[in-house]
Amino acid sequence: MNTGTRATADQLHTGLIDLLVARGTVTSPQVEAALRAVPRHSFVPDSPLETAYAPDDAVVTKRDADGVALSSASAPGVVAAMLEQLDVRPGMRILEIGAGTGYNAALLATLTGPTGHVVTVDIDADVVAGARDALAATGFTHVETLTADGAQGHAPGAPYDRIIVTAGAWDLPPAWWQQLAPAGRLVVPLRITGGTSRAIAFDRENDHLTSRSMITCGFLAMRGIDARDEPVLTLATGVNLLLNEGGTAAAEPMSDALTQPSTRTRSGVTVRSGQPFQDLDLWLATTSPGFCRIIAAPDAVTSDLVTPAFRWGGAALTNSTDSFAYLTIRPAEPENANTSDGRPTFELGVRAHGPDSDALTQVLLDQIRRWDDEHRDSIPRIDAHLKPAQPVAGTIIDKPHSVLAVTW
Ligand SMILES: C[S@@+](CC[C@H](N)C(=O)[O-])C[C@H]1O[C@@H](n2cnc3c(N)ncnc32)[C@H](O)[C@@H]1O
Image 1 (cartoon, protein in one colour):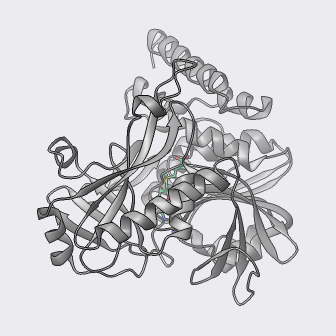
Image 2 (image 1 turned 30 degrees about the vertical axis):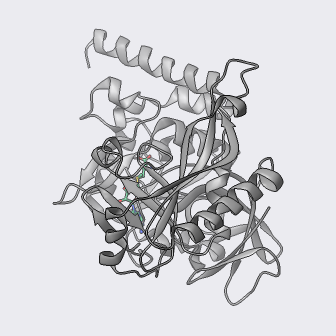
């Protein structure tokens, strides 16, 4: 790298970390120091420097024959937020699942210092070779970089004070419970239900794990022995319903719903610009039978075929046969718009398609209003129990290895 390019890299690097601090994503001096110490561009050498240091973009480093992303350096904002969740201290033993480029392993090794130990595993041998090379080139030769299916952890290095998973997990396999130290913490991007994911920091509490913090994020799905399929129902070009694991529905009657007039109903519930309401998704996912996710291509939205809450789609419900409804969001009517601080106000609503539209609309409206009345300011808690143990309270989500209980 010539002097000019190095100066640009240094500038972009500093700018990125300054931004993450200013945004409040980085809150601890330790994480800030680690992020400043590790040059991210050295782990994505084939990407332009601007791409390497973009705060909110993952850098895809490997795709399959169909172009589906298999490996990436996660977006810096997500990496930083998960390191804050993990709370690494000097001397700790850490297992990372999903070595990818090796960037996060380098950060972990910086945080745990010379007295600690980092093991990072990836399911793909070529990815491991790349991570090992990048770690060696940046001076992190002491990171143990191995090819393995992370669902089995790495027993020889256990117990771990911290386990961090950097691929989207469907469940909490037994190996993680067995290999986590008694006072350990597990941070994992977990598919909770109905396509709703959170990066959750779990601490051990007696016989179970309990959530300490959650952040919204999207991750490449874990492959290997614990991979799962989410059934996708294609209703029209660019309109898909992502059903819950194990969910079934025939595409044809559901697609017919799109050819009939739809209904649009306002809820009277408003949200302000800049006010997070992502937990509404989790509320709907864990309380509404038939919860699913609508995924829409830009053309389907601009033609008004479907108008989900977000650019890409959003929370939806089906009756599993011929009808579906989804959350919408649009500028509030003047009587509902709080204009006191000049921030725009939006109103949540429901659009429904098919013969069962009225019933589905009512279910969704009831749950939106309940969230508004009772849970808008509450932080959900997730307790995870390794089977056969059973939780006693909360909304129960039954997974192959574990049972999650969500309480508000
Ligand atoms: C988002 S990338 C990880 C990013 C990485 N931590 C970094 O700093 O660059 C996810 C990685 O998980 C890996 N992966 C997927 N399934 C896995 C599994 N079952 N066990 C281990 N690694 C897995 C993928 O090969 C991919 O490299």
